[in-house]
Length: 76
Image (spheres, rainbow, N blue to C red):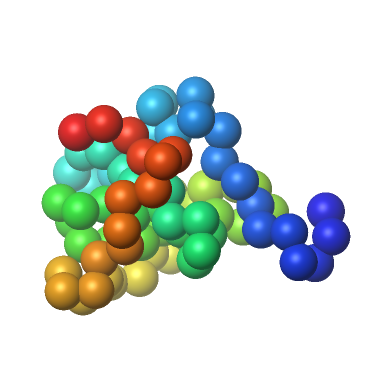
């Protein structure tokens, strides 16, 4: 993968993944390479195309600054 390329999440994988805390849906934020849980207000990093679904690795997201829903998001 070239440096300027950002990791992508397969749409089928996104349909299978859920927030480990709330078991709710996740939204893919391609710009930040994160999976965002609206219910938990946490953003889980994606490193080298692999989602890191550990709450200890997630960052807290300000509810007012939540990512826009992308085309590759899971339906709620």
